Length: 194
Image (tube, rainbow, N blue to C red; front, side):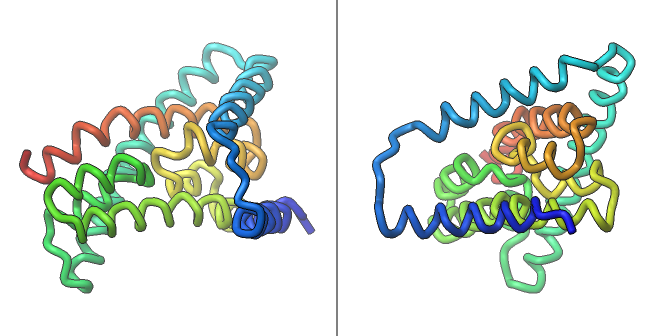
């Protein structure tokens, strides 16, 4: 049995418990650790990547980003129908694609309730990606599975995706997340009618 998913859940749980009990002030240490992780993944990628693989990965990453954005909006609209959320807010929440720190504040300029919902829904998307991606690659292709991470695939979930999906997926995941990160700040105000 692959113990990686178990280690991810155990690490996340222990970190949560330690944070609740100890309440350490780590400042922006997490940010530097994230940069170090991305650097190490880049070093690993650079060891054996050729130009054709780079071009193919980039194209697939862009395609997956577009389908992720469209699918997220469509799914959010459908959920909004059942939950009674107005279409523009449901669309904006879905268009956040996991980027909770921008989605919540932008939507909150129009509605505090839906801004909070946008924040929580997109935060949950990131957390569920960390927990579920290692399991998903057993059932679906790693490239398809990475779409669950949305914008987070270029940073916070990149390590999990690379470890569980293989280092071949890392560049696709980075491009996927990068494209979404470029689109979300433009798309949200357009949807909300700014």
